[in-house]
Length: 159
Image (cartoon, rainbow, N blue to C red; front, side, top):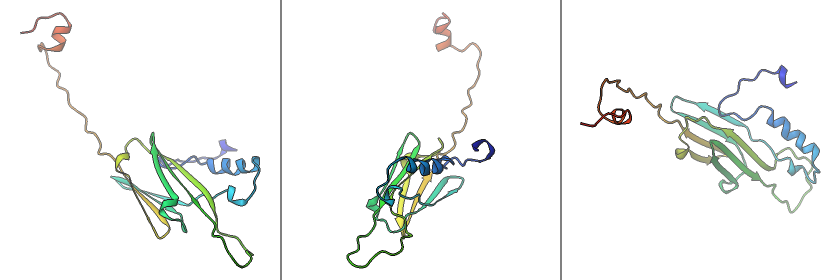
């Protein structure tokens, strides 16, 4: 079925089939509670000429429950939303998602990973990922009969 699907991947997006793989992993492991499945927060990616902006919906979480790391141009955003314990009353409906999550994004080589900023407000984690300035090509002048390294290398004498 994978061969029939055309998918244009954005440089910051995760593997399209990873969500399906994660679902099937759950069927292969014993599940003691629905919290083991966790959830996948929704993600928006904006690209400008000099940066990327990511917005991840994680309502009901605290900053200390969210971890953002980068290693080898892989950005990992992970956390856990814990279910509040109720002292009274019986839960008759459960629609909100709880548990652990992790989003892993492959960053292009053009980003400045040392200057990434993360901000959490009103249930939205925002990441500012600046791009490095494009390196300009360096012009190398071609010269004839120049004294220096090549002359010494080829057995000539220095002046």
